[in-house]
Image 1 (cartoon, rainbow, N blue to C red):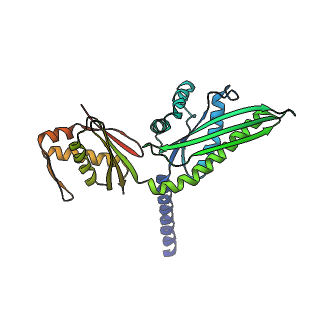
Image 2 (image 1 turned 180 degrees about the vertical axis):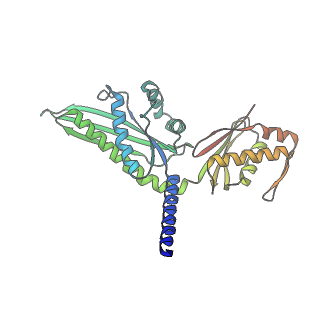
Image 3 (image 1 turned 60 degrees about the horizontal axis):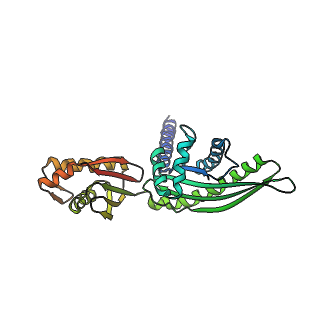
Amino acid sequence: MKRSLFNKKLCVLLCFCSISLLFSMALAQTRIVVIPFYEENNQTTKDNMKRHYRRISGFINNHLVSKEFEVVNPFAVGWKEVEFNLLLKSSRNDSAFVCKEMCRKYSSDIAYILWIDLKKTITPDNFCKIKVSLEGQGYDSASRDVGVYIAENIQSISTDCDDAIIDSEKKIAILTGKKLVSQLQIKNSFTENIINIRLEGNISPELAEIFGKIINVTRGISEAKNYRFKIHSTSVWRVLVSETELFRLNTNITRLIKQIVTSKGIFEKNGVLFHYDAKEIDSLKRIKCKDTSSREILFVLDK
């Protein structure tokens, strides 16, 4: 009887540990969206473009999912070719901005763009030859380069052009998937707890200093450093977080501001004394959270 009871307890403990392990693994997953973009001068894939996008995206996503990444498929729902092409055409000039917008759209940690130029030729012996020029660049949701640049040429040849194109797309997917997995698993171990906190609006140096002081004593922040300030425009802090996540951190900052305002500018936290006059309190009241992504919290100064 005792042995049976012990075995039941052991089974429950092992199940609990397994669930806890799976839960922690799920939390640690990087959420990524990979966006292939066939260049405008490409005529080979112009017909039925969505089929090509879905196919190459599927090959890449299969590889990433097998390596325990959380993957968003941009072509699964709500895909509009005209809107997609307009946005991606600007990606050559401002890939960081486009990736940041894609991170917001798909609620992902990382957005990765593939620029694909695919050309078809028929050889003298009537084989179909596909040559692909491939470039890839990615950024996280705070517009930081993830350091996985790709520049490759790929060739496939077959008696059937559709088979040659599919083979090329598989090669692109394998190359991209392997590169992303090998580099991002290393990088994420260093950067997963580093985020940006941004304040935008008609900011004075004094207000930037006040907000920076608040950030430094907020629960969940181990270290904060201001690395950019532009008067009447923006101020950005690079923050090391621990034992929290961004949405809770956003709440902690907002709550601390309210506590300072409620106490009429005289407040103490973690041994740090806050003492602000009526004008400074009015400025703090105007600070509102506008957006929170997986790597950045954006506060704005209301007019």
